[in-house]
Amino acid sequence: MPSWLPRAALEAVLIVFAVVLGFIVNEWREARHEDQAAQLALERIVEELDTNLQALEQAAEYHATIAEALGELEEQVRSGDLPSRGGLLETVMPSLPQGISPPILSDVAWTYAGQTGALDQLDFDLMADVARLYSVQELGTATTWQMIAETFFFNEESFEEHDITGKLSFMRLAFVELVAQERSLIANYQSVLPRVRDRIA
Image 1 (tube, rainbow, N blue to C red):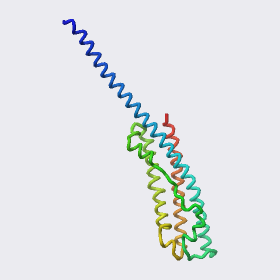
Image 2 (image 1 turned 45 degrees about the horizontal axis):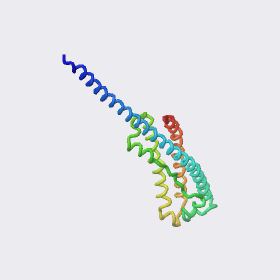
Image 3 (image 1 turned 90 degrees about the vertical axis):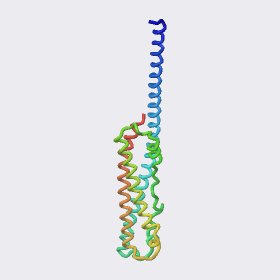
């Protein structure tokens, strides 16, 4: 056996070991980077959910007050204490001291995390619950807000003189529905948010 063969074999083994070690180190670095990215994404999502929850709680309280005030106006119209004919907005605006005040609910952190794949390694069931939360936020309260705005506030008929009895009742019911949706969404936030927060290392 040539004298150089053991040395060459050792060098080959060392080269293979170095290559394998390099792969392991790279995989470790990538896994660590992915974990850091996921943690940062979770922190931003928690901040976003916290802010959204506060906005929802304030909005639901205000909208419940509006629904109650509209109910009182409806009763006054039915009893004859207020005229049933007039402009809808002229009648209801004193009951809306802050306007209609839709809550500004963000989904920027969630959307960005999804686009970058930062959450791919996290618990699927939890992420599915968060996705449903954002979906309800978009398809529930946002859709109801659009209906309220288009039906009552961006509608020429609301500025004209008509019998407002039916529209007033419809408006009250729309705000009652909105409050129910907001409170349901708040309950979902209060259920999901602590679970997301617990995932932050």
